Length: 100
Image (tube, rainbow, N blue to C red):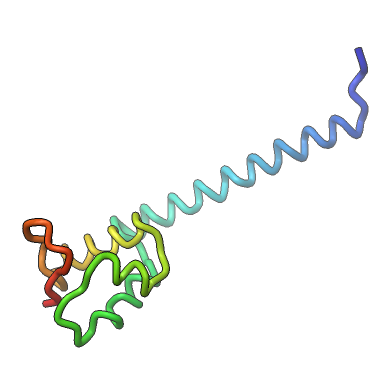
């Protein structure tokens, strides 16, 4: 059985430090999210406001392609727009929502 060298111990400590730093970053992001409220400050949301200005309808797929974001983020943006009364609720599975 080989004894742990100082180098091995330093490497192990560096891995633990990296893990702790990652955890701290996640906690900081969570705290920021909680301070900003349910939706937070998402720059893509403000891009969406500019994109839908002057449009009659907006669809999930169109918005996702224009913003180049994932499914969950697009859904959060649409939920926020609906909650704030900027788009109509989804009716009977229609793909397009009316911009109000």
